[in-house]
Image (cartoon, rainbow, N blue to C red; front, side):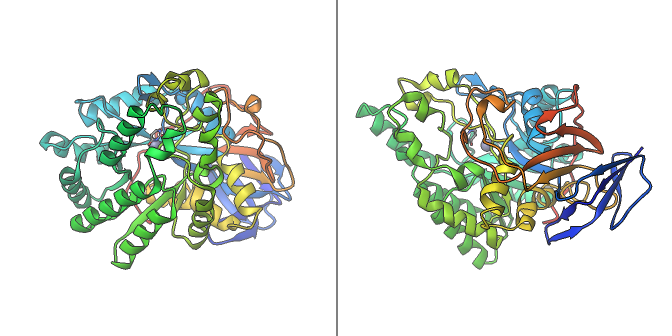
Length: 457
Ligand code: DUC
Ligand code: ZN
């Protein structure tokens, strides 16, 4: 079966070109002007054709703070697909004391046969010892080429010495590490002070996790990476001081990749100061939302290529789950949903508002994550031989984001009331029409596990 998308404009990381796209056996078989000879022809004139979006930062079916994210692989990946994301890379997380192999098995149990889009895993390293070192080659053999470490959350963080050793070993093996950068000790101290003062509302959340304590951790990580002589990824970077640390490291000659998320580009910390608990608690995530004044710095960094990727850190909890922290802000499970709205938000508030170009959006959502995480050129671009993952984006459409229209398993949307410029008309996953006008057409999970290779960014 040959399917032809006719009359559209193909988007790549370098620009736009008018071309028809022929799909055959799950792959793109030709891209050229005026193609003919397909079993099925779909008119996409006036639309932009993006490679399927890649979300390299999701948390599906994750246990956090005594509860579990409301989205599992079934609901989360279905919502992702509806939002144009054809591949997610989720964070496999071994239970405390378990091996990396156990963590990998556990994540396959959670994901296999349940995902509507393609998926891969990063592996979390929250401990460092000979056993874990010995497991790493098997991780690469299983298609895991990227890892995650934490500089905060006492139960997860591995400390400077172990991080140094782990980074050195991963450099030797050709892996890459994404790091959550926030200073743990001072944050703990500030939290204890707020609690002692009886200040237990969500308003204490941003106060106890200030941007400079993120910048401090970024700076320290980058010096540890300098010592280990290895590239690193800063995940969910939120602010200009942290960006300055990245810039300084790059001036020293280090390779540093940066991810940010729609919530830091579009939302700000004022939401935490709402009097009503639920209105504020729903936005609790770490790092917290920042002052609005940070946003232009992030957009500029994206435009200049100083930030490489925009992922979501999708980690959804219902309002009932958020209410676990009604008496104590530290018990609010942290995280926001985002996987369903990222593409339309970045187009609407980035491309349509001329903060970034469509090509820059394509780099941040498609090409760069594919290259950074070893999926390129199977994913991340539209080219002969690549998977036929395509988002047909109609720039002339518009709608209002409403929780009630969304399908993620969560009862609010952080972007409620945001108006889109354009909209996703169709999503094709490996040559199959999977979403049309907001409706998921496929009844059964069709996502495949993606064993990933090494970085090419
Ligand atoms: N931050 C969150 O808010 N949730 C999940 C993990 C993280 O780093
Ligand atoms: Zn995360």
